[in-house]
Amino acid sequence: MGVTLIVGGARSGKSSKALELARRHGDHVSFIATGQARDAEMAARIDRHRRERPEAWNTIEAPIEVVSALARVTSGDCLIIDCMTLWVSNCLEVMSVTDIEQRAVDLATAAARRDGLTIVVSNEVGSGVVPVNRLARTYVDLMGRVNAIWSEVAATMLVMVAGRALEFPAPTVK
Image (cartoon, rainbow, N blue to C red; front, side):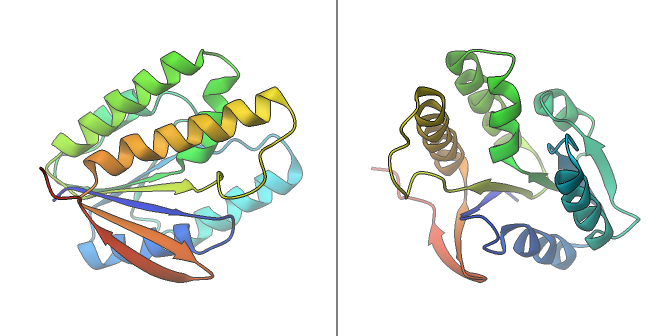
């Protein structure tokens, strides 16, 4: 079935589009959530996202260990990973940029080999001003690389802008 990458800015409709695609796919859906409720606002966001998903869907909380979570997903299930943005942020607290990039490659490769559709949500954070501090620049650069890693394996990429999706097909092999 392949990988569909959904990228866009904050609140652009990425997660809603992922849910829509998964609902069209059928009843067997797994959801890997990378968010952590570290404050009340984030807890409310997570709760809202949980309520948007059908109860029958299998949810796996995996703030960092997404590769091992992927191994627990039933073959053939539609899978949503939401989102790479929070995953990278979580990983930056405990591992090097090089290790994160390698894990992103491992995860994207494993997802591309799955029998079922994999829908990956990620923010496009590099379209703004270059940040003034080193950590923020590192994060923006790393997100660009992680998104590019996913783009390489994606059969389809959707860019969300103000709730609308622009579709980019997979690049042709030269």
